[in-house]
Amino acid sequence: MIKLRFASPEMLVDINEIPDLDYHRVDADGSIHVGALCRHADLERSSLLATRQPTMAAAAPLVADPIVRNRGTLVGSLCHADPQGDWASVMVSLDASVVAQGRNGRRTIPVRELVRGPFQTTLAYDEIVVEAITPAPMGEAAGGYLKLERRVGDYATVGVAVSIDRTGDEITRAGIGLSGVGGSTISADDAVQVLVGSSLTADVIAEAASLAAQAAQPRTDHRGSASYKRQLVSVFTSRILTRLIRSEEEAA
Image (cartoon, rainbow, N blue to C red):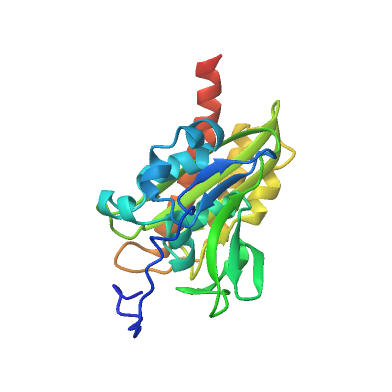
């Protein structure tokens, strides 16, 4: 916010010396917990995410640029509430939540309820987010993240996160989060309903991609027209889901 000249605080509090907040781990119930001081770079190099949460693993190397990834954090990105942020769409697709600590104790906030508008959150003035939590998958986890940016580190023109859980061929849970195509991160719920209970076929993928594009609320600007951005949402959604089929075929 200071970098964007949206805020000029009289005092800054450095939380980097607070101990035990730089973790990411899997709990016994299968949920993944990411502490407030866990850097993007830690997640980018994480073997845990590579084996357990493919959507997060796909997004981590694409966040901003190496300088930002070395110092920035997933929790900080969520609290920044940038409509073009990478992690928000990923965590929305995973039905994730954050834990906020205030003077009156802790509360859990779903990520999709954290953002009130561009660069605005539902956090109270005395609250700080201490960790983000993704629930345990309902079956085998799969997914991916794609975005278009004009150059490395630029704001994303469009970002699409897709996550699915499967038991056999049946999709038991799904999520699609969209960045850069609205005033805040968008959950493509109609597209998700098409996926849940289905298997990944060409027709299902095409319908889900079309509905994801309809969920987008882009504006025409110097990065492209609204129709162009909707088309990108459709293409990215289709591409991520199609890659999952191809990966299975190659593995077989």
